[in-house]
Image (tube, rainbow, N blue to C red; front, side):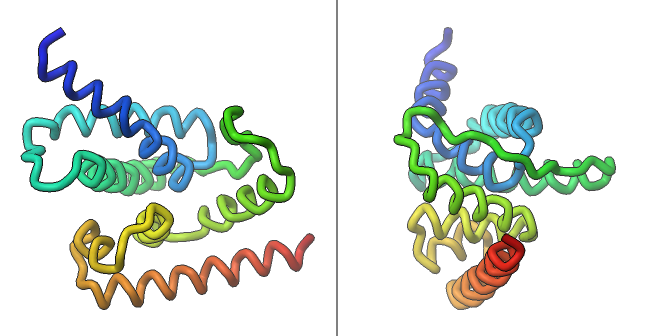
Length: 167
């Protein structure tokens, strides 16, 4: 294995949680999620020569992963595929908390009703990015990121409330 490949695989391994987070936010079906993970890794490898180290590898990886997920989502819509909403178990390494699991599943179901850009905003927010950093990742102003984030959070609350009312 060449040093470039080794360095790439080391970075992917170190930041594999990004793949899982982006996949879970954008695709609910486990088989589609595996396909998306594969597509993200392919795009990361194709773009690896363009990574100049001006930002953290994880920041660059998020940007490529989210852009790939948005493209994947659009491609799936064009092909008429639907995204199934089913219950998928969280990783076994986490202690099981039925209440937290229920809330998390409700959150992921609600997220499926967001647009691809809204999903990216929520993902970046969950990762602790500032409004400025979210704006940089999405190519929008800090103020626009703040407004979009607030609107997206309100939309999620409305969707979640609707689900709770149905229970």
